[in-house]
Length: 547
Image (tube, rainbow, N blue to C red):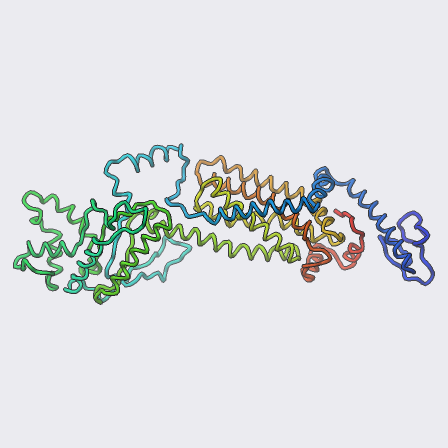
């Protein structure tokens, strides 16, 4: 052309250079910018060239990219359609969040095999229901310990919970042989006998102690033995003398005469019954316990178990307020297996606490990663909102559709959902902000969907297929994780391709709004783009698509 532009073909008369006028670079063509009218005509010529280039780019698109460019993006960028999508997803996320907030820890230990598996259908069922005499195993056995100062856990490592779990430190001043200590222990037994089980709708009996279980108060029984069988003892003695206490205790455990003639065989059962009640270490009594079978059944929901635990703690607090110094240091617990009782209550609390802790860590980290990846605060906030909706959707599905509790698998999935959700929105957000050569939200959204939409769909499908392999497993943990992963990936792709994109189409940033210039510059450097290439790209006309 006449301007020496190298663009091929002759420019219109209005775009030719005039003498002494400043040259203007437009898509590799040198033109003159002498008058305002000339500038307008130059712009029109540029747009015509860009339109021709867009047509050439569209012709090179693959079928998936062409679908997003010609059909999907134009439809979703329509304001009524985008608003409808946001309304539907926002309403659904609100309902799912409400359902997710009602998740509670499991009321019983988790089962690891399907119901039809022989371990569940036969072995476990027979062990738990095949015995007539196993009713007492359904109730919590409670232990009050007297004489415990504290537990030394200085060597405990939370990353190796099976090692160095702690050492019991006994109260140096503990002495159960005094008159005051014996009277206090007997009064504590009376308190337990008179206490009510006040967890409404749970306790099988009104009393704290299960009526048919038999209540053992070791000091009362020891005093009764002393009055009846100890040589020279006062039959009306109210307590065992301190200087004779240990000798009376040893005789109480080994003397068969208290069972009457021919009942010596009962001695072994008698010893096993009482030996756990008094702790003798290095020949000295270090602690005593008060044990009983409560009328509180188990398994029971977490909130009701907490109520029962708090009631027992209130009893401990009342005793500590009036205990003599030698009987201080009172603790209570249960002695059921770790998957029952208060230990399982603590596990349930940890599941909820760790899920919330995971949210507190992952959401801010995800926001920072999104800001660094996209270089735009507004896009990062939109992506974080999408992630929150996905998390709400997964947890809501868990309760509403599957009826699961907040167990181990659910707690883990609640955190990994955030990682899966970031993966799809970050690509779309980054592509949106990379379209600096486009001016409008619709163009930027169309650009992002065209060149990264197929990749997002493909990534979701491959992850979904990978997770589906877990459905072949036998253990319920893995099949449950397969369900959660499949649900997470499906919701992540849907939110990324519909909810997040609709947000961008309606209120996406334009003209550099929300950009962090330093991050944008770093991104250009990381992508190998210098200032010259960036300036040329910025001058390209709106509507241009560059792969």
